[in-house]
Image 1 (cartoon, helix red, strand yellow):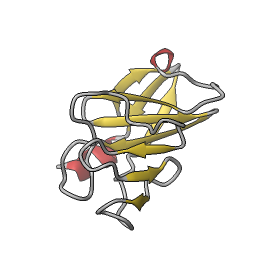
Image 2 (cartoon, helix red, strand yellow; image 1 turned 60 degrees about the vertical axis):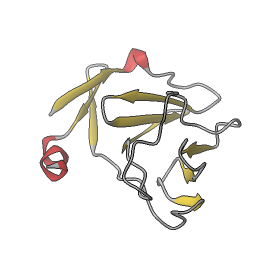
Image 3 (spheres, one colour; image 1 turned 180 degrees about the vertical axis):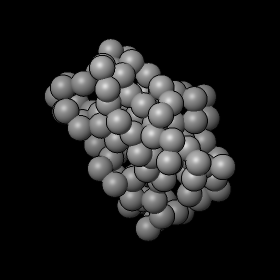
Image 4 (cartoon, helix red, strand yellow; image 1 turned 180 degrees about the horizontal axis):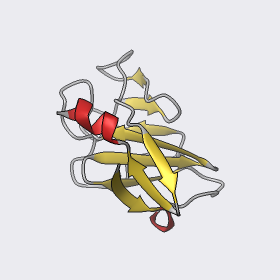
Length: 112
């Protein structure tokens, strides 16, 4: 396993969804649920962000790609609007242990 971040860096149990970019990964928290995605849009395989690290839409209901405003569901990473409609963000397996979020080694091997 590889340490990605301390859970204190994530706004867990908030009424609104929150996101955090760490290296090449996007962590999204909705209530007490965490989702980790590779920060790569399926449209052109570029990072979802240009400059900003805010990757949720204004209402914090969807993940938004800054390149072409594609919208992805938070729970599945499924594109519902934009040039990659039907495409999906790559979900990353993770574990939470002792207040820290880790990426599992099996998924890291798939990244290569």
